[in-house]
Length: 214
Image 1 (cartoon, rainbow, N blue to C red):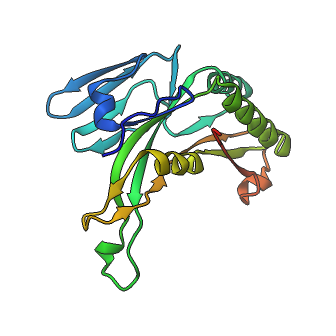
Image 2 (tube, one colour):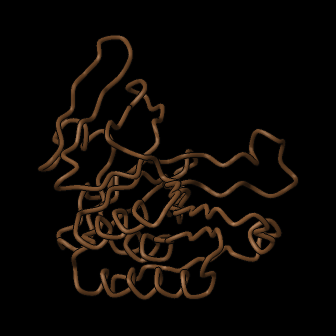
């Protein structure tokens, strides 16, 4: 299998099993016999955006995590989240998957197959990442000022570039696989108190920007 971690501090990619066995600074992993793991994190040091999930080791619960889709209800919550994004190390869970086969195969063969799950972290205080986050968030808010909005911050392209250099995956037929990345993003959802928020209702206030690390 591929290396478990990247060396640059700007981004790390760690297999879930390795993360649980050897958690990074700011994390403590507690095994709950028969039910899985509880992962505790220091909110002063890291920002965890991971939903509870099931893996071969049982259910993994990340405490102190609002999940991958963060709901913000007022300016104070937005300001606090923005500060965390721009100053802490951000942790996500993503899956490297195998694309479905052609339509000529049966339904089971067409289902996406998860090859490996990874905990991905990026340094929000890194100048390049911080600049992109600031620019993307400012663009979102200036575009939908006073309205509810949703913004997706996407790392799929960055992970594709990383995978091309760092991992080699094979299918069950021992064929080389270029993984498709699922859940390689996180979302901020802001809910304003506007009575008639028509742009949001009709999906016009959705934004997306990509993070690129090179």
